[in-house]
Image 1 (cartoon, rainbow, N blue to C red):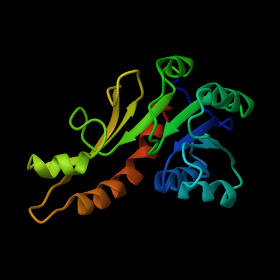
Image 2 (cartoon, rainbow, N blue to C red; image 1 turned 135 degrees about the vertical axis):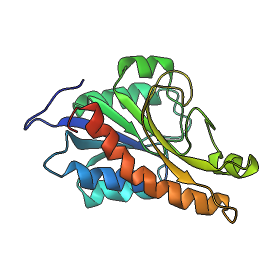
Image 3 (cartoon, rainbow, N blue to C red; image 1 turned 135 degrees about the horizontal axis):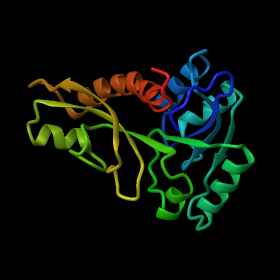
Image 4 (cartoon, one colour; image 1 turned 45 degrees about the vertical axis):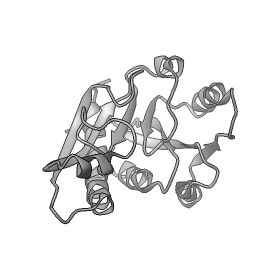
Length: 193
């Protein structure tokens, strides 16, 4: 996958479930000249996800997964094919992708996680950091494999945990770092930096 792209940008889908702050940042940065990606599709697991507004604002195709749809992954794969998507960024996507789905995009799905993996996989990472009196936490961009938050690490950013910190104050500071490193990780993958 590591190659210089010239004018041809890699068509990318971003999967979301919530506010879409990482999505917004990725869209903005994808419009820069040095970006190796172009966001061609937004997929959401929640029809009420705030981040869907960016599909309207930036005129990007979207697809919302219906609740309890057992064929949702087959439909997503069709949407990815129709939109010629060859790279996927998970950005607060609250569904676990099946082994079969991941196999279809092996080495082409990345995720951003709000902890310094391999510590604190899954949910409630900031609460776990407070509970365990960690001195540092942060965020990790990693490849997605068939084990939760266990793929090869691409980039991490560390922040100090202060005595007065709460899960919310950590979340806010970690999110700022997420916005900084997600695109850097993409540049690293495609050998642009």
